[in-house]
Amino acid sequence: MTDDELAEAKRRRRLLAASVRRAFPGSTTYFNGSVAHGDANTPLTDVDLGVVLTKKDAEPYGPGKKSSLPLMEIARDAIHNDLDDEFDKLTIEIVGRRRAVLVRFGDPVTQGQADFTADVMTAIPHPSGHGLYIPNTKIAAQWDRADPITHTQMVLEAITDTKVVFARTVRLLKHWNGTHSKPMCSWNIKALCLECLNEPMPLINALQDFFTYAVDEISKGPTADPAGVADPIPLNMPRREVHKRLCTARDYVDLAIEHEKAGRPLSAQHALHQVLPELVPDADCTEEEADRLARTVRSGGTAASGLGLSTGLVTPTRAWGI
Image (cartoon, rainbow, N blue to C red):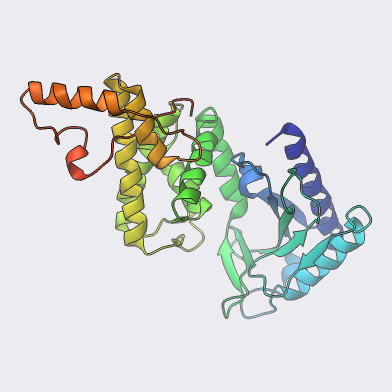
């Protein structure tokens, strides 16, 4: 994305934040999602933000009390009132929305995209003082406990601690996720990264650390909320299928690193292409592989041994520009 596109996305986010603060006097707003976390990919299509009511205004709402629908209606009306003049195609949806008011600007930030949207969440303080109640219109209680403010703080700290490697790795992993049937939501990826990426390192090593860690953790069960407030993070597929995809990616990344260390850059690139096909061009590694097999046989091994090839992996990858 360009700097201008990001600046425009943030400007629209500020407009929405100002609007809902006026709608709920004394409230505070927070930003979350990919733009706030610094890991947005191209094309830039949406932003996320929330408004937190004061304790007094929140009293009628929560589990066993009122749902978030009246709050969503207030937010919708305020946004229309403030933004309709600038965005004449603006539409806002609340019916059927699980968590947030959906704002459609009718005007994309990135050229060639159909639209640019925003999720605006109306939240209330949790009585414990830790985290929030956020809407969930799909359950009987109508509210879930969560802590998106702490989540954003944790992500930003990780970006600083790793000298931006955290954000760059998440971007790559979101590409992997998107090209492999989206087995995990983006927040699950980030939550796992928070546990295994805590210092600067080359991106290929960050990918290796993530997949190695994720394989182990997903084999145990769902990922816990890093803030210790919300329920475990659900997967988009059966756990066995997610684990399979993570294992495959881990093996290809390991193989790419082995090839690179052995001086086979084309074989490494071919391997990494299997993980990130949109970002890493494929490479013809025929000659490199023939040479490797010949040297393996000369040294007394078999043609199928070494570098994981006997387990069915095709020689993998690098476009070491990642």
